[in-house]
Image (cartoon, one colour):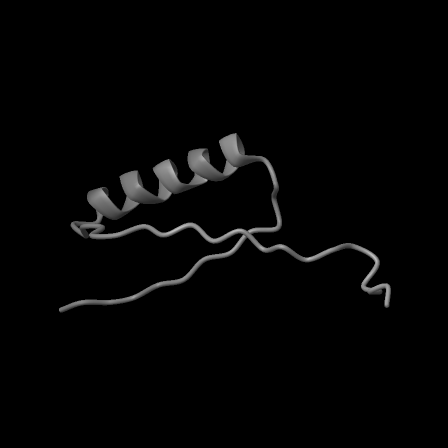
Length: 53
């Protein structure tokens, strides 16, 4: 059975994010789950929300 799970974080600290991913992977392994693929996408949102014309 394949299950897809999506996570997001507001952290911009890549070391912190990788640490959390490693912790999730260890926990998945302990539960007998395997991770086939991990994708990273960075949000490119600008703070302030206004665009100049």
